[in-house]
Image (tube, protein in one colour):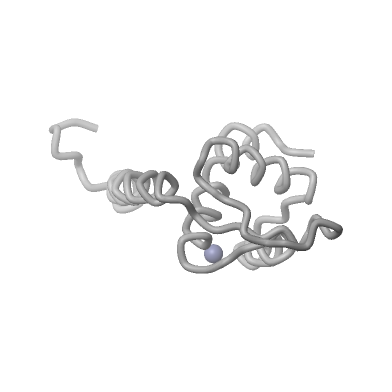
Length: 111
Ligand SMILES: [Zn+2]
């Protein structure tokens, strides 16, 4: 079960994390579960696989794997649309980091 914080906030962060890795290499479910677990995020397959399917439907990931019998072996890469989104999100996360973590006053003058 997802907690309220998982559903409201972390789900988006996990998807950004997935985009980042799918830009660098081919990814699949069990690899992503282990990778996210290393960062302290223990997702269930019931959370990850629907998220991957939604990211594919939105055109950010494409299936590259060919083993239809093993769901866990479906592999994914980022699409050009996913790359554009990742670039935008990188800028936004950098700005968010500077404001929320480093507590720098934003250029627009207020906090
Ligand atoms: Zn990672």
